[in-house]
Each structure stands twice: as structure tokens, then as C-alpha cells.
Image 1 (cartoon, helix red, strand yellow):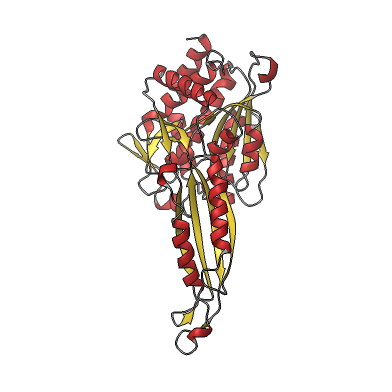
Image 2: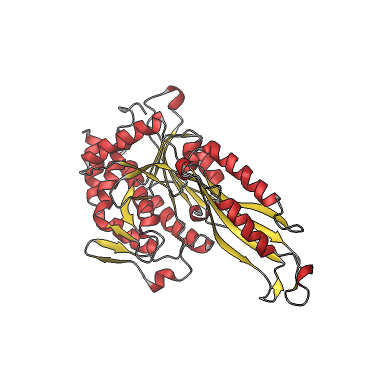
Length: 393
């Protein structure tokens, strides 16, 4: 262990209470994906912390959702050559899935070493961890390349405005640590499905369902036929699932439905499967099962899959060893959930996900965080950063 590693890990060990206080402020600040002011308020907390530690922060304005923040810590360029400008990226999102006022209804609490509150694990604890790791390297130095803390604001809805910033960052990334919550097992995520979230709208023709039934064209009937066809595209052996999870439509019970709508969740493993399945969905939407209906499909958001590569496997092996040095036993897991890590992986940046503090039951009132995991997970990340060169990354 180098002197710098000893200094950084020892300093992080003294920051438990300060981390917890920062997490409490963050959890008690509203920040649903569509609450730009709330998400930006969390961003202001991050910016103030970083600048208080001498770390400059660039704000990348977003129109509808939370702004993106880029916090930069200068590092060395020991590898030279083509790697000297590549950045070590620490990534996380500030938005949550909860409605306005949720922190007032159930504010941050800690009981028996477990913290509760909206977004406590997904993923405000990961944001706090990234902040403190950046501060440690700012204080003691030692990073083999520049560190970039990227804090986005709309991951929970598919990163419609954050994606371009994430992808631009990925193009200059040497490695990416995405600090989504560690799995309840303590593991990290080395693979994730991609996802496409879309809506289809159907136009029919209204008519009185008793007195003039034959003049109507049922959009809901067409919706039912399309749902059956879409669900039939599911191929569990290939990891492809289709779910129409929300439907609406109709005018009244005694009217042939003039309109209907369905929302589709597509999950897949291999990137090439995305275009194949989406082509088949377009065919279904373009076909009229009930003559006279019309339909259109709109993609509302999507994620790329996180698939293992030789470089990401090397990064995971490094993290696994540095986690062990922090007293943690960590394996890799595959997740059917999506995350921003898919965008960076798709562009070739070696990426591992769920390196944040350990928690579970995200998106529910029972969401929790294991408080004791905050410091060791921060130390594991710091050690991994310091040992990138020895791992050939």
C-alpha cells in the first residue's frame, strides 16, 4: 500500500458522520425526475461541497430536467501517449422516482444502522460517496489521470437530456465507475439489459354502441390485438421481454372507442436485438387488425445494455481485489434493470456499475441503505483508482 493510499483511505474512514449529514440533506430535498428545481437544488448541494474542497464544477444547463454537473480533479498522466487525456469518470444521477413532497412524508431516518428515505440508496448515497472520493483525491493527490465526477438529473426517465452529456463524457473516459447502489448481496453489476420505452396511440371512430354500433371502429379492440402481438415477441431464452404496462382509451362505456393508447417496455441483452425487435414492433403498429384504425409509435426514452468486455472484466477484477482490501467480498451480478452505465459501455468505455453503498428495495417506501457500507465502498473505489496503472487500465 502506497503512502497516498494510506492517507486517502484513512481520511475517508474519518468522514462517516460527515457523509451521513450530507446524505440526510440530500434525501430531505425533493428531486423527482420532473421536478427540475428540486433536482437542481440537490445539484447545488453537490456544487457547494465540491467547491468548498477546491474542486471546480461546470454546470451544463438542461432545459426540462436537472442540469448536469461536471466536477474535475486534476490527476497525473503517468501512462502518457494516447491515454494522457482520458478521464477516470465517477458517475451518478440525482433524480428519484418519487412524487413531490415525499421527503416531508417520510424524511431521512436511521434505525439500527439502516437508513431510510426517498432515494437514500438509489442513488443519493452513491452521489455522496463520489463527492467524498473526489475530495480525497483533491486533498491528497495520487490519481493516475484526471477525475471527472458527472452528476446527471434524469436517469429515472431514460436520461432524455442527460444522455448526450454522458456519451460525450464516455468518449473521453479511461474507465467509468457508476455508483448505483450495491446489490443487497454486496455485489456490483457487471451486466445490464438495455431498454426501450415507447408509446403507441390508436385512432378509431366513435359511434353509439347500442344505436349505431356498426358505424364505429374500436381503437380499444385494436389495442387488444396489438398488445397480444407485442407480448408474443417475448423470447426469454434470448433475454428479450415485452410488457405493455400502461393502457388507456375510450370515451364512455356506451361509445365505440375512438382512441386508445398503450406504453411498451422492451428489455434486451444484445445490442443487435434492439433493432430487430423494434422493427417487428413497428410492423405491428403499422398493421390494422381492425380495418379503419390508424396508429403511430413514439419512443420516449431508452438505455443501452451493459455487456462485459475484456477491459470491463479487467476493471471488475481490479475492483474485486480493492474491495477485498477494504474488507468486502464482492462478486459480479447481471441485472434486468437499466442504467446510464449502458451508454458509457456502448461507446467502449470500460464500465462497472452498482459500486455505490449497499442498499435495496429501490423505488419503494421500504428503500434502505446499509450505513456501514458507505466508507468501505468509498475506500474500495479510491483504491481501484489508485491501482488502475498496475492493472493495465
